[in-house]
Image (tube, rainbow, N blue to C red; front, top):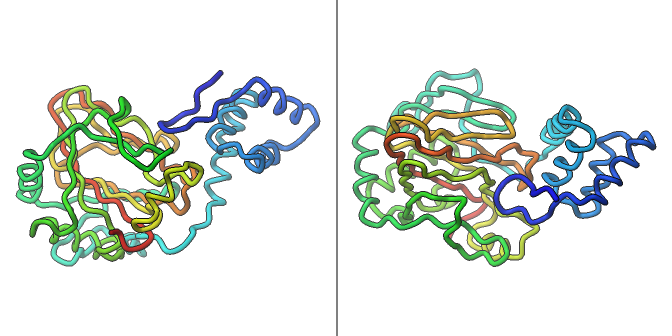
Length: 293
């Protein structure tokens, strides 16, 4: 039995599922129709794509995944920088921020000079004394727990807790055109040598029992901004396995990505690669549909 990719999935590919797909192929059913039938009967998209890859081959599965991504329609407005005309820099209310890279599918933007060196240092200094082993959301209950998939240390600032938090939150709101009140407090993480965060999605899985409790505090997550507070000697990249994207952690830079719907088709599966040498500090800002409380 094949375990599905990504942390948090509970469905697995079964022999019966493979047999059914083989029968569909023998009957001349188009792969996209087989995928639609699997989704309609309750199979998670990621599981269905794994099964189709095993039976029909990786090229067919990759084409289906790309097709699904193109079909994703946003549930509503999304946080997004103003990138018309491909600007080299954007004004973020109090400083110019560089636009280093932008990708359309998935929607990923890499920023330079988002944070000043002294801001990076202050966030690290204020966070260091409150670090604890990072936790992940338990999908079944909405609670949090320590899990082997996430081996960093971390802490949360409440929104606007210090002047530096307020300043950075205002800057992010200006840059991404998203109100401060629709954001969670900054989370600071430290990764030592060997520490990592295995690939995962930041949205709350609608199929899980604990999701309503998470949504009650501000709706679904719709965007993520990861800010790099230092530059590790080696390793620690932010990776997007489904999209083949890797962003190196550089002090003061950041990577932003949005997800139009809580679905793997957004191609926003991402992770933090292991730190090989030195340490990595990041500050993460999650953006919500509504006011976060």
